[in-house]
Image (cartoon, rainbow, N blue to C red; front, side, top):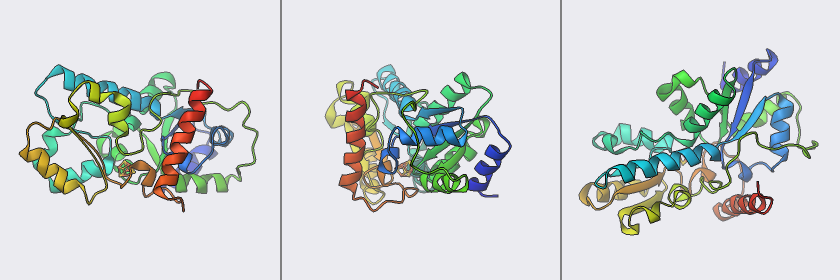
Length: 265
Ligand code: SF4
């Protein structure tokens, strides 16, 4: 059984489920229609994973403040974490695992507020399936890519033409909606006010990673590397099917952030 079939089976047996929607969703879906479609599908609640990103930020900042000599490499990117484990095992101690990824932080919120529900993470990334199953099996997260969610929508004939007038996130976060773009963690956490800008490196795209990791190993003054495996960040993840350019995807995220800010949501 694949994850699409697993998800369909859960809905067919009316299992209580919460959806956790990754912050790259505006590249593929419109708000609030996507929330209405997910609720029509049968989700008891729909959570914005940006809320978990806020927790991630708080935990990263706390780690850096706790020890002025501490040095970290960000760990929310499941693809990058797997790259380090395979090719740079000497850097594993630097991964900031004491900070949950936004997916994991949101799943913990879901478990607290909806303890009877299984969390379903919906995002742009296949590597998140490994993060959920290998690193956090206790949270019982089923991970779907946006493409796989489309297959579930199609199975239940839930289209985009839907009344979304009352649809809102059940847990939302206003300040972290640009998280899926490169540098999202650094910018939204205010990291540059905590450590010096020259102590930070921001990088996206797997081809750029080796040079930065080499610099991190040679230069102890670098205290934080904010890294995403996909070029441009999660907005360019492999689970997104889109003909939009990277700039157009970024604009979708920025427009969504601005629209929500204007509505005070
Ligand atoms: S940058 Fe790519 S590999 Fe990393 S979490 Fe985002 S989509 Fe997954």
